[in-house]
Image 1 (cartoon, one colour):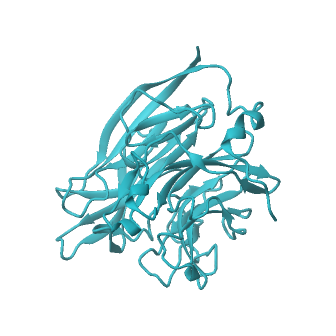
Image 2: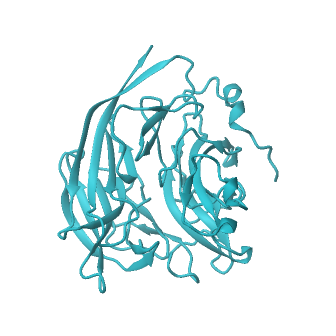
Image 3: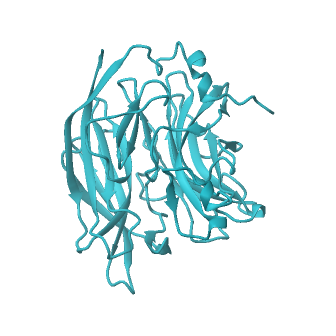
Length: 384
């Protein structure tokens, strides 16, 4: 079925009655801001990266991350899990799960089989997590479910046939109607080079992640590739997306001014990353992707997006936390420091926002003293 593509330039007409679009000028301030290290490896320099953050039905917060210790020629990978019973004021390590590690991007990175990064917690306590299988070209990413708090996990559930596609799932979120949205980069094995053909795709589950519907392509590979995107659900049921987009110009001179370069390959394969944004419009039981357009945000790794209780959209990144109340036409930076790298964030019932990430970057093991950092703040919103 073919649907017309709706561009963000038409948003003013489409969302005049939407609570996500406010005509009044707002003043948005961050108050009660804190930032502190909540965990450091037993070794220095420490390797602690790629955080997950989730909240259990009883209100407890948990986060996990990849930790590597030991000699460089025989490193050991684990997934520490921290828990907070007081809304992020204090954290206690409750587990340290062994995990495989592999070489990626010049440094060690956890295989993420036991990571809860991108996981969703259902109201009945069921955990639905991602399994990337990124180091096995013959495998594909999958979803696993746990009914006992993560003590055991069910069989792998593949959103697409492994023989046809390799899937890199990175995010699951729950909609207000109870359905789940899975985001992944999808590569058809017949399409040639992975990097140039990794298609941004969403899937919907109506049975708590036990099965997934047909793929919904958010962007073509020509518009931008990468398995890193995030979204928030608006009050009208539409989904507002921010995408990290990799591009492959034919020549290095085709790269826009200010774009963030990635790698140092010859000009014919040179690529860069930037930010795009789009809306997936709710149409009955499915969504119709709108046209992606450049976002007024600099590239900064994995995007993190939230629709806050204060009726504004937040974007979290290392260069700053920005807000918009006009669906990304304008972004304004809050007067607080940027987040740690690859942040995960959630807002508690009382409005407090908790952000977890790691100090460092895509660092090689043993080269940078990494740590796990928490930011917290609240928002004060007034009409000007």
